[in-house]
Image 1 (cartoon, rainbow, N blue to C red):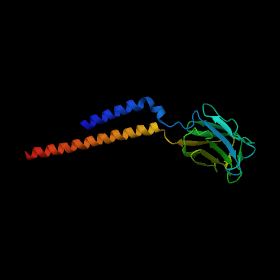
Image 2 (image 1 turned 180 degrees about the horizontal axis):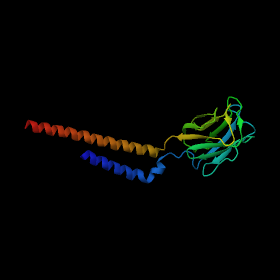
Image 3 (image 1 turned 180 degrees about the vertical axis):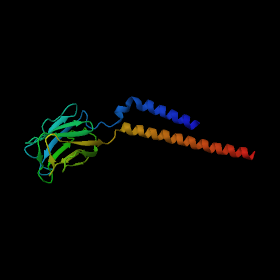
Length: 196
């Protein structure tokens, strides 16, 4: 019975602690941050087609109306956890070691990337990442006017989220320990009654 009471108390405490901050408990990845975009060709060391890096502050609306290279092919929209490219021309990507975009943290304000997942029906695209860069390679790819692709990004969780998870684990451990102690006490009392 005490274990149930402790569990209820733990749930109430966790709800009170986490409730007001639930939206902030998730990591803010890109929202409000500056991200730099550049088009690289024919490799990851060369900005291609006369393009220049473009710095965007992530917020509402499309940040880049025409991709930053000599021949724009797509708009680029950032939100907190994804990057979306909407193509407005139809082409096949030239085959090269690298032919695509680099999205990166030039100012050191974005948490380290821990994941990048590509969602598209377009053939030939691939995505890779490291702590500060997301690389979208379209070498040999196909894209048509009106098509799109999305990259979902993840970052290292904020310490507050980890602290809340740790608090929850401590509460669960304490509840289990109390339940185990009560079960041992009941066995001891039952054995003493049988002996008496």
